[in-house]
Image 1 (cartoon, one colour):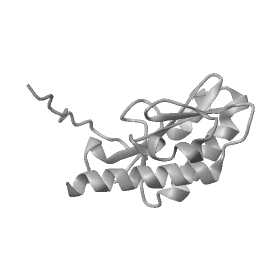
Image 2 (cartoon, one colour):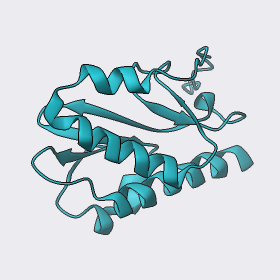
Image 3 (cartoon, rainbow, N blue to C red):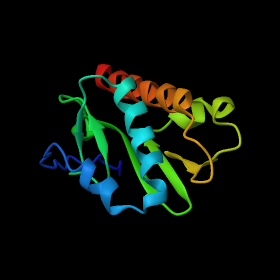
Image 4 (tube, rainbow, N blue to C red):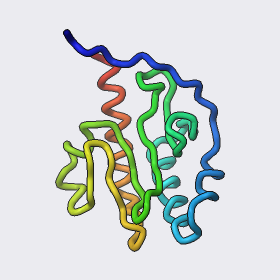
Length: 135
C-alpha cells in the first residue's frame, strides 16, 4: 500500500525569530543574525515564523508544507540551515566539506556564515517547492 503524504496543517503565526535568537548563547547570536539576513535577502517578501518547528522558518503561502522552504537553528557546535530535499544533494559540489544530512547543512560556530552559499541553497529550496506545486 502506498504511503500517503501528511496533510497536516499548522497555524502559522508570524514572528518569534528575535526571541529565538535572544535565547541562544551570546557567542552565536551574530551568526544567527547573519544567516537570517542571508535567508531574507534570498527570499524577499517571505513570512518569517517560529510556528512550524519552534525554530526560525520562512514561507510563501499557497504551497505544500504550509509553504515552508527554509529554516535555521543552533545546535552546538553548529548553526544549521534546513532546506527542502533534494537541494543539498543537487548542490553537493557547492556544499564542500560542510557536514550535511538529507536536508540540513551545518556551519561550525568557529567560522563565518557563507552568505553566498546560504542564498544559493535557499533559492534552490524555493525552486524545489515551486516545482513540486506544478506537478
